[in-house]
Length: 354
Ligand SMILES: NC(=O)c1ccc[n+]([C@@H]2O[C@H](COP(=O)([O-])OP(=O)(O)OC[C@H]3O[C@@H](n4cnc5c(N)ncnc54)[C@H](O)[C@@H]3O)[C@@H](O)[C@H]2O)c1
Image (cartoon, rainbow, N blue to C red; front, side):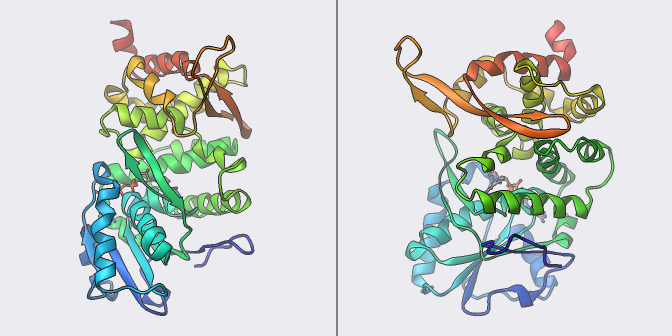
């Protein structure tokens, strides 16, 4: 099924049960695929170019150094500028492959075939490609939208349950951005992830990134949960998966919104949120470990403070509201201290009491 996207949208979006070779590029193409998917790809009767790269890239290796051998390999093939690169894998592989495609010959076309729920629901759409630097996640990258996104749900059969649940958080984020309380509550219940949720999340994201491709305004709303989430992810030494960290960041953002005087979230939403997140409590870093990471957030602004002191930092924060779209606020990183303490006490009451 081809999803409806705004007229002129850079990426054609397909949501299918099984892979379909007809959706591969028409002309010359090559593949960068996750080694874990190779058998499934071949079993599905999909073609494999002789110069395909089958790789295994953990989150810690989402680095520029990982893509340099790929670029050298393409130059050796050689891959010409009319060729298309196909990325088959999760968000790490698609972020890196998209980045490599943006760099090679100053940009070649690419397609993305996401294979994790997180990549299907979020990472593969929107044209953001990137790699991490020692100073933080996704600090280097390019906006380079894929020509086509093909999400095949049969690939999810082999995905470990923890990674399936990881993707659910980006879906819940989408509901909270829109203030869609019933949808968020439905997704917080136990039970399998449903395809229409992915479809709805993709349609929403396509609209937002089409209106604001460079994240100058509205697109920043997609960072809901990411401010505290990225800090917690890094502070856990990446023990927390990206989506899990975003889940914690979503709870933190609900608490920050209340702290900032916005309408509080009802217990009917906070309770299931806390129940789902409670197993992650041991990996929530203490506040002193989070503060420096919040202050060096990619979207932070540094400038003179009110009394002229150097380097007062402000960060962009997205605050969700029950029943209404989220709003943006620029706040000091310290604004997160009380929500962080409340988050810990909600998730881990016995530790906070001890
Ligand atoms: N570009 C964006 O807009 C955007 C948005 C959100 C997240 N991201 C990025 O996405 C990354 C996280 O992506 P992820 O959660 O997909 O993690 P991932 O890419 O690390 O994949 C998770 C694990 O699952 C394996 N895997 C992938 N597909 C599989 C399958 N079908 N069956 C079995 N195993 C499979 C991978 O080898 C890996 O070990 C982060 O780096 C994050 O920054 C990017």
